[in-house]
Length: 112
Length: 114
Image (cartoon, rainbow over all chains, first blue to last red; front, side, top):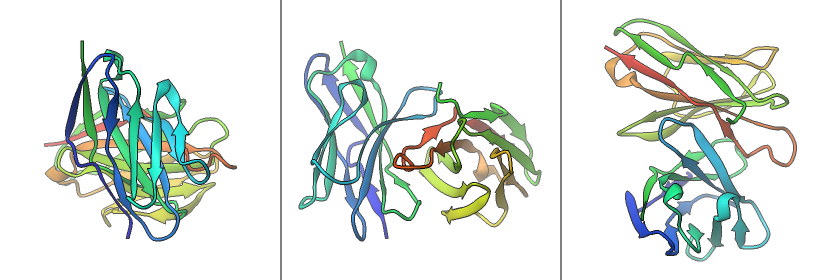
């Protein structure tokens, strides 16, 4: 069975500092991994995905994520956080079956 | 704006009632997904349709049903509503081809069951 875990409910970071939002997964077969962001009163927006290839994936708004097969992780990163990055971030996993399991979300708060 | 539209934005109804939520996917997208987002359960995948056919089923209750019509819009029907069905219901769509797994979410329908 597929599962995904986001161990932190909230991450606080100062503006200009690097940020990391953690995600670990469990899936049979090759994972399809995604990050989405949700701003207040909005739907989720796609940020980036890993299907195959280079372990470092670059996405929208300067975000990137690193796929680590041995640690079954797919952490979201950004070198320099902006106040406008404050939002709810979801990691999701699929395995080609069209069912996508979303994590519980991590609230990112970037402090000015 | 993702291009996915959902109506209504808000819905308030009573226990035991039945409601229909509507979703129009982005132009050209053939897949439609339905999700339920509640505070205690997070974002739960309910069901997916591709070009009118059911493709995947998640944690969808028997009281809930969905369909995708020939014009590709989709409806989620919720019946015998319970207080616990109060949640945000999101629809998402994805295109055919290599980006089939990138989902574009609508703004959601907030359902309140009293």
